[in-house]
Length: 265
Image 1: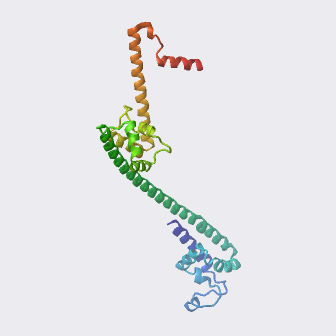
Image 2 (image 1 turned 30 degrees about the horizontal axis):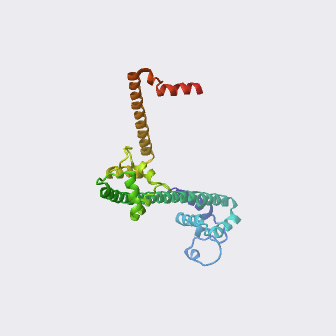
Image 3 (image 1 turned 45 degrees about the vertical axis):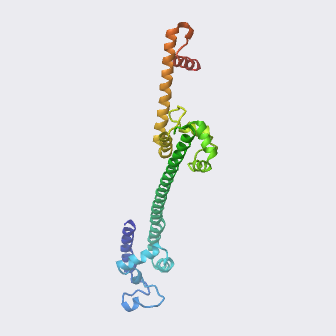
């Protein structure tokens, strides 16, 4: 719309300044002269009417007839050439760059959407692999121990004796050189030393589909859980101190930390 408006305004100026100027040697508004194949520059043919002027200006935007149009004008009306140069710079190098920028932005946005779609499909594939792994691990543990719960030993035994299961675990994009003990600690959400099939799938689902804010929430939950456990341990120690007297005389942990912080300050 903006380019069309600029072309329209510039076309009016060119009609008044160039198209109506009869001082050009080849100026003619007759139809037979307009369709003539002579080499003379007919200013009316290029700028005589609004439609002709707009068409000529569109050619100037693409710079396809720049020399053909501007050189005769520069000889007869040098001042008008300045207007045409400004027009060409504004449209061909200004607005067109904006349009190209918009198209590039749209292309980048489409590429980002496509990448997000591919990532979502990849996560869905990973989740299917996780479900299959959980089922195979549960079956393996049931065959060995009679229960579907996994322990570090049964997990190691399953991976070492089932190459297809080991290959499937590598497709989940776990950290490089991840050991069996580290994998078990990663999945053992409640830290009870045992993993069931639901815990396996729920933990891996969280790891796969959590965003930045959700990861922060999970981390904060873990920190608060640890703090709660420390409070319970501290309360138990306080009860023991009250029951056994001076044999358990010590400063509460949080007070000791405050004292150490005071010394450092």
